[in-house]
Image (cartoon, rainbow, N blue to C red; front, top):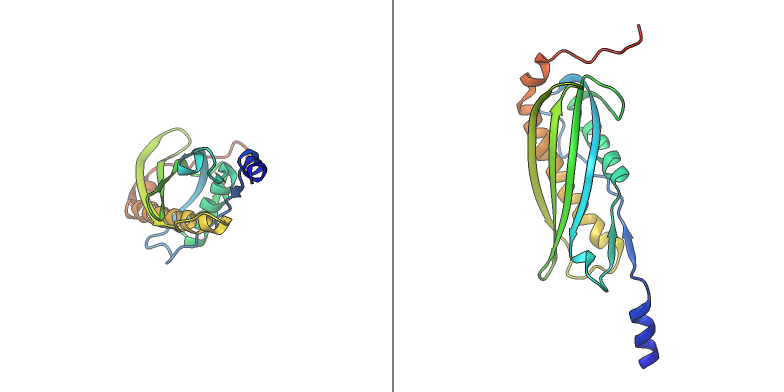
Length: 179
């Protein structure tokens, strides 16, 4: 019994590698006929998964970037969405935090700065939460509530941007350097 306990306490923890696919609940209320460049400047993770002996959660910035661009494309807020040069630029800082009191609660906070390549226009700060299970046995027990919280946060963010549509129609588009 002592040997089994020693083996179990020295094994590295399981890692839940998260890949999310948030889907818009409805199309854009006000589309913006401009191209959008999306950049994720940082993704930080805080909470219960970083304590010793707790299953580690791994959610990478490239997955958040892909998920954010897919969401915006599917919602139809902008004429096009990419990581390359565009009329407008959205720089996003994201934070995932977890609280473990009974069921795990996952909080996603998105801070987004909108502007052109050279001039800021407006900043947004949204935070949404989703409740998970009380045990994190499988990847889905982390992925599903993270995806739900991200979907809600993106919905709030895009709703706010769509409400400010007139701000994004006034600025001059970024011009390509090639003729």
